[in-house]
Amino acid sequence: MNENHLTDDELAGVVVGAPSRRASDHLASCESCRTEESRMRSELKGFSEEYARQGERPEVFWAKQRAAVHARIERRRTVLWRLTWSTAAAATIMLGYLHFRSPASQPAPVVQDADQALLLDVERSLRRPVPAALEPAMILAAEIDRMASIEQVNEKGETQ
Amino acid sequence: MEKAITRMAEGIGLERPRGLSAEDFERLVPEHQRRIHRVLMSVTRDTDLAETLTQECFIRAYRCRERYRGEASVETWLLRIAVNLAIDHRKSARHTFWERMRVWRRGQEGGVSARDEADPGTSVEETLVTRESAREVWEAAGGLPTRQRIVFSLRFGEEMSLEEIAETAQMEVGTVKAHLYRAIGALRKRLGERRP
Ligand SMILES: [Zn+2]
Image (tube, rainbow over all chains, first blue to last red; front, side):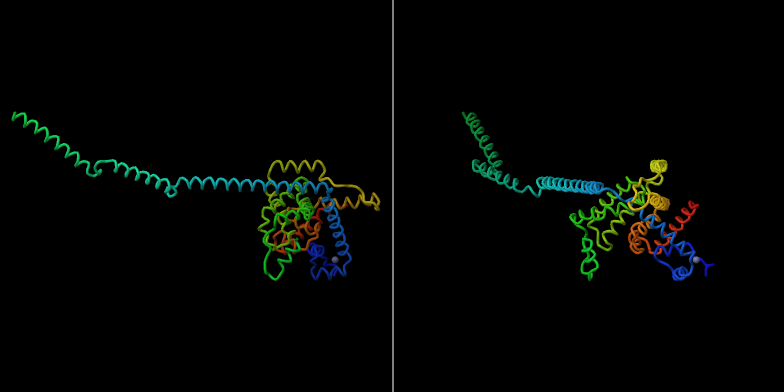
């Protein structure tokens, strides 16, 4: 049995916690492989201890780390908050601008102007001696009258 | 809170948790900062970088807290972010001049500082030998490729199960084993070379 010692992978499987059936059987009867296994376990234990030591820090270190993370999150929140507000403000201004600028939103002043114009028109019409539509005819009539009176004066002079 | 989330997720499938609130998040930092930092310290072997990436891990988690669906535990989720950060950093820093300078300078200075005070109850000589051999394994593990180092740290540093590591590193269990076997093989070789 001892001529078939465990391979590196089989030994690794044992210390990793996933031993093969053959590895378990072999270890039960081979002292040499058991020695190698125990040496590997002791080295891995050494790693585990040094690993823990390397991660040790005083409490003030962890407190500072928490404060740093907290500060960065707060900064991020503030930036997002400002961004949200400025976007909302920009959107409000834009909407307001579009609202007062669009033709569809101007009927009130137009109606007011039209009403005023109509009132002025009515007033002008009432002040006129003749309706606006008959004004050209009136001018023509006046002209005919003027011509007739001149002719009468000439006829009088000729006859006199 | 983690338990509550897991309970909800593992419940009768009624509802999965919908993200983490900012208040929930505040509690995560003190609960998990040590572990995240430890893993990053082992993977990066750089005190400042481990600190920077730990903070970054929590900031990223905060940013995506609403997307957390409880498929993995909060701890696994945070470790996954941390591990990805370390891999990304490694990828981007591998070829930069300053990174190489930093590694070289650390080598000159004699590696990462460790607290060498002796434990009470053991002889100075015994402590030195044990500490020295522990340090040797730690140093040797520092020379492993990034993914092997991650998997190795999670297994032997954090004592996580193969399934938990697979979930954290987003690999198949078979791949986790393969990385571990290669890592252990490389360590045995390196430590064997140093042995008289
Ligand atoms: Zn054997």
